Image (cartoon, rainbow, N blue to C red; front, top):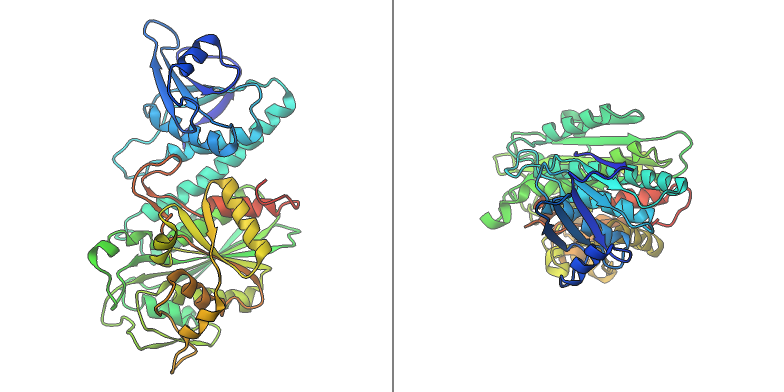
Length: 474
């Protein structure tokens, strides 16, 4: 990641970035007044200044000046400058620590490029000239910058993992990446199950059975001393999804390297919790498999026995995500008994039909938990909309030969959540269906084209709010 640091000494050789708001000097104020919507969040206006220093000024719109607006300004600034251009951002005197956090997150997230991409990643340093001289404010700014960097690193990791082609990213490779990341951080433990160790994971074995790359089950744990709350995060980890025997059409298959976006998000959030030293026990569970077509692929009509001993009739091998999540949830309920469980999964195409490309669906029977997660998402800049967990649809999951079927006509997001509901046990729970917002077709503010890392920001906000009883949006 490129460097962002505070400075006390202006440098006229750097490109100056001026947030558009009250208190501008007469020249900047005149430039802003001459530009339509110059204060709109995410709007950048470029003014060359030949024969003067600095030789270029960027006006960055910050709107009402809340964290989201500063995040938009930061992302737009990162994209407006050349990759190696040194930027110097002049903060107004009334800039809050939340604004600094938003600005820094926007700069880092907007400046992201996939490591094997054709666009150069930002390398030029960003210097922030603080308008505050108060030492308390300076300390708060530094804390905000640290938190922003931790979140950005988590999102970058989630994006990198999701953007990696499936020709590289099989279950074994992804499990190895998790082990490597955990090894660099004290206090984390990793367990990887494979082969005969997966005997009870019937859904995972069935989904992964048609691939030459066998499945894995990874448990990543952050357990700080004195933690009194245990949160389990479960992420769908299908490294590529052909649809299996119920094969997808070509257009539906070409982005299926992103079908492990949920696993990437929960791993990134758990690593971030360790980096922030959060006093919350966090366990990430990632069932990893490639849903391929082969002689050993599972078939429509097969009956699968899950970790908890219950059975599912496979009526559509392209509804595989819920089958692997069911095993992970059964394992969590039986072996971990957490205080609450959150699933994050690129689970249904119906997510995009219902809510469009930018919004994840949230389903939970727990109003308080749903409200806290929604508040965390709003603060983090990830859009969430709660859908009803309509229990009267559950009868459509009935099977004549098993405890349930895995796919049925009806409201797809809701039906998938109702399927999963059986496996959470007695824990409080919430489920995110984030298939649509896991991928961006073009650069859009803090989202870079490709994988978005959706969920890592929301989860880290929520987990941080459990530290000391803060509100989830704090």
